[in-house]
Amino acid sequence: MRKWNATVTYNQLVEQNVVLFGDPARRQEKIRVMQEAGVTSLLCFMNFGGLAHEHVRESMRLFAEEVMPAFR
Image 1: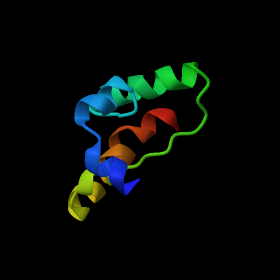
Image 2: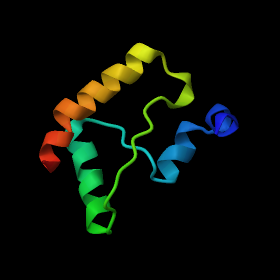
Image 3: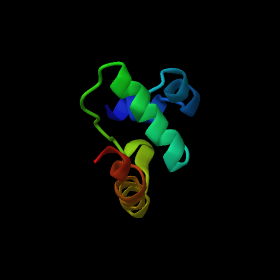
Image 4: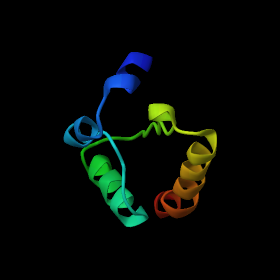
């Protein structure tokens, strides 16, 4: 996994449709599309690419406060 993290590019992540970037509404829409396709679980890997701890925590907080409420 570390090797993949060190070599994967942003474009590869976007092309493979494995990332949830963007504002809360865009992320909610992508999750809804996944739900409609039958996905029942979502694993959020927020510390890829060697992000600083404070950035990871901020991403987690924003996801919990601005994205998750739409699915409760």
